[in-house]
Length: 146
Image 1 (cartoon, helix red, strand yellow):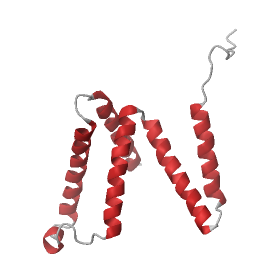
Image 2 (cartoon, one colour; image 1 turned 120 degrees about the vertical axis):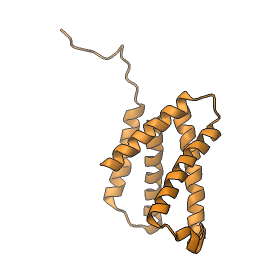
Image 3 (cartoon, rainbow, N blue to C red; image 1 turned 60 degrees about the horizontal axis):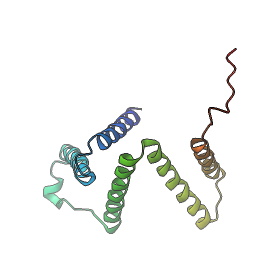
């Protein structure tokens, strides 16, 4: 619960900062965001494993898979910053959900195993997107106030 609240608060704050500070470039803002993330991650590393960097070096245990994951997450962060700056948080959430749904569909095609719960989640996301993008014409809507 605390993780959900902190993540949501950080996301809303990041959107606020990206939209309200147009005097800085989006790349400079990304450097600031990533610097804070690297600082806190380094603090956790020092707290949990004080001698890890001295024993094995900073990149001890890194493989090609880890490096490719870091590159993908970095590109994901840049794309999210563009979404938050020029759109809104709902679009960011939908882009994550659509990426997850596409991954599920590709996995279902590749393994030829159909999990009905996963398929149902893709259908629910599609319905949610259609409801989100449906515009209601307020002039044609009848309100019964009498």
